Image 1 (cartoon, rainbow, N blue to C red):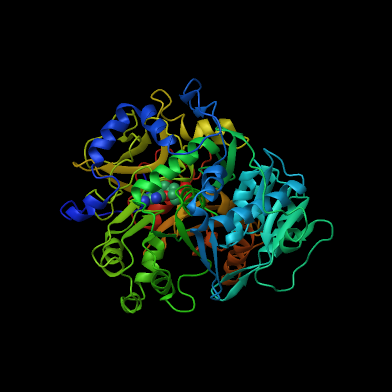
Image 2: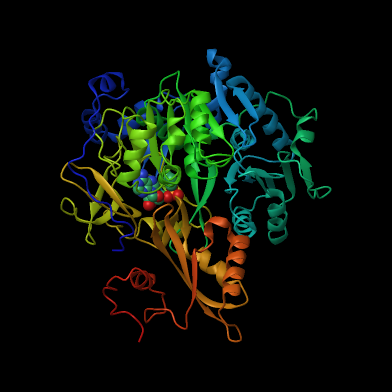
Length: 636
Ligand code: PRX
């Protein structure tokens, strides 16, 4: 098993919640709740589902007649937007702030539930007027702006399936995703602000549409206001569309089956192109809202800041859907944490009175490097809880976050989960004792285990495959358009037992605490972003000089991992610093800035198995100066 990162177990370092924290927590006794949940998971999830409104109730909580294609709340009629918006505007919450936003240049906007609902209705009417119907796919390629959330909600309201593509991806990545989803409508913006510069989203979108001509209409938000190309008859400014009489502030919500698709979100896997994980309305709304409510201990007066990008699952579940379902006030910030100075985030926490901050280890490490003086300049006393997600958090970064940001009084919720799981799976709650670097224990209703090749549980502190033994409502239902891939990637490995293979290795200590080690497949986490070696290798090989390439992840103090690429050149080409620079540029252009290798090396040969598979673990061991292990399958 390939160990990506060594975490020092810190068994003796336990942070116990205070008696006061326990008495104020929504969930006071995790053990009792957990025991109850796994004794009767269906009853447990049904109770939580009843917290929400349904147009019609379900006939069956879990339909497991065709594993691994599980169905939840079958027969129920619903729409997640009904729970996220429609029901709130009928109550006092219509005047509560739903979303507060600050742009990188310092401009501010806020939306009450009523206003957010109206804007969603207007956008939904625009979509309907363009012929968007239930089941149609709409691709969204935007920065961190309120209109992104509104666009997602508008799609869901009319029953369309959104596919949000992270704004940091380049044209080929966008084109592939548009093509796979066959989206006729694309929603984008002229540009997004990042580090004082414009990320030219529309320009990239134009190139992607050239490569994937299925798009018929493009809706463009004006944000950065530079001159852009607008194709007559194809491209429309959002503000022009919203000025039309069709953009009325009320709009009916499409009645959906609980199992109707809500969104597709592409993520990297072991092989080939990114796969589109499909999530549905019914189970997803129950799972995301229950997990957020308990793990982050939601109180009506909280100001929640999930600093992720809405283009990733974290943003889908915990910026857009779950906080709105809970009637929370969310904060969203457009730009870079260090712009114009490294105190930007701390200034935001102070000015907006943020009570819960949820971010990623890479951001914490990035800000930690500027020292304590920047956060210490600000009043961070509004914070009561902190969160972490995306990769294992190093105990050192954990302690800094706890001490300097949380002033030793804010517990850190280290949430382990995945695009595929929809929401938190292994995570503490405020009443659970914490160990820095451990995501602690499974969420109620979730049965996680560490097993060996034979699917047997391993002993305490031994490495193994992290699996989930039973279905849960937030799980992805399939890979869009490729159900075989869903089976082969996640379910074939432990088919007999019916376990879900997470792709992570982990260990469990004698207290039952889970310690995530890292990926066991060819997925690399760079700054918390999940990248497939296959995508970066394809980008390299699409350059005329490269015949073959292999990429590996090398541990990096700041970014978790960085990419090292090995390339075999085509005849007639020679390796040089200039070519390295050209290749980096090419990858940036093809798949986006986060995918650019930190190092590119030219080689004559790559280690391969006799069947021709590249042995990346051999490259990695060599790069790290480690023993290459069993290479009996290596080609001579
Ligand atoms: O390796 C695990 C790591 O992120 C992977 C999932 O990536 P993605 O689908 O992009 O979702 C990220 C946000 C949910 C996992 O397989 N991971 C996520 N959270 C943690 C983590 N590793 C350790 N600790 C975490 N808290």
